[in-house]
Length: 265
Image (cartoon, rainbow, N blue to C red):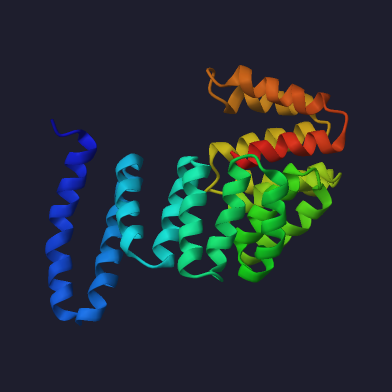
């Protein structure tokens, strides 16, 4: 019996294949594999956006099996989004077999190590690769690794570099605010995260980050009040416990590790 995921994939394939065929007719023989790969990636992305992650991963796998290093990197990134650090590492290593100096694949390996909780290995890789890739994403991932390692001032520097490359990215700004709070820059952190929350594009996660920044800055009562009004009832007890754990951690490195775990998702 055909599952919902398979039905959706079949419908999308029906819509995609004729267009792909027409495109291939106009393309040279050498271009056809690239056209097929792009079509498969569009299909996988559509499935993922529809919440069909398992089916999307199967399509990414198919594209990576016959594609280039970039296709393997896309597979690895998809595994990271699904929370599978082992699958991500396998895909990024495949990309590096095809292209040993591929920066995004090297960055992905560091991110996969971070996902598996191997902080030292992740930090060693990301510290080396982030300046080479030189993107908002690379320095954001380095900042998360530094936070997990308890290196708050260094994390601030990494997030600042990330923020300078994507100043309109609210997630990066929120990460920077958390690192600033951990590094003792309380007023700066609160001002930054309040600016994030005031944005029309702000999400529930950003309001939770505001609560964390407030807790780190000694404004416990305001943080708890914010939780009562912005966190769903079913999630509230766990989040309040997290706040209390954060406030009770007397050591700066311990607080940094707790926040780093939150950032790593």
